[in-house]
Length: 424
Image (cartoon, rainbow, N blue to C red; front, side, top):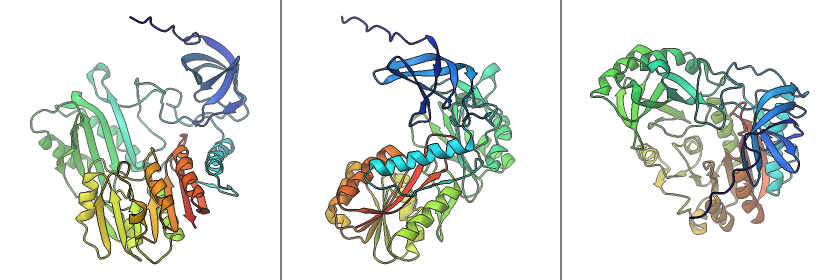
């Protein structure tokens, strides 16, 4: 039997360190000898005492146990849960340094993809705009509490408020927590997802099991809280709608789309509007457009007001909703674009493409676009790292960058949405 490798020598030790820079995820970076130490919620210039929690070949990670001397970029965090909660990680940065961090992230992604960032800027949204949230649950003294996780941990932190949420969601937190405690199956609730749809508020309960007739209990909950729909997801099974008070819909362009449970939406209404207007402004207004990773048609239906659109999506529930929408000039296809991207030949039937992949990006599809005769592409990405990789493939194929900006709709987090338009 092979011997167990020795534990990394730094884990569990404490050190007084000075932060000299910020990493790509917003962690402060200090050094122990030649080993980089990534410290959550630190600022450049901080002198602090930190305990090492993990170590690998790339360096060590640490948590602050005592702030000895704050750096000039540090401010008091506005949220009372900031130091315990893992949801937001950048509230300690002053506004100027926060904006510099996000802008540097955008320009670095463009530069590393091979494009001149010029004066590419980030558009910043205010905090209280998020329309989607997933709460974890735990049961101190047997009572359900809404929670988030601690940083880099599965330990729950009970919360009563959240500054990034839309006011309608934040004011719902306490009444919802009280109502969930009345359910016979409350002990089986593992997570609670809430979405502020255009027609009403949608509730999805992730549960390990349910008691008989949960639909009766959930129908009463909807009525009492004024919610639109309640859905149950048992383990990894598909979500099942348990009770509906009013239909749950989203309006894209002039089309009201039914929203399947747990379907993708942009994190904020403001962000959706910004990205939609950017797509419309930077694609040719004639010719057929293909909308890749289309979701429910966030961009398809606004584009359809002026030209034919073919939507391609891999999620079965969203494709069913798309196909149920009979509109002249609109078609929808179910296809896994990771395993079976549209080929260069297929893409050449279109005048332009919109591509909005998940965080993994769309390497295979970007390669096919590069090999096609497409002349215009609008890309929306929620991951600067995979954006950089995919945009570089377009650069190598002769695409020029005609517009780009960042969108900070994940406020106080290291995440950044990027819009870019390309032409050749």
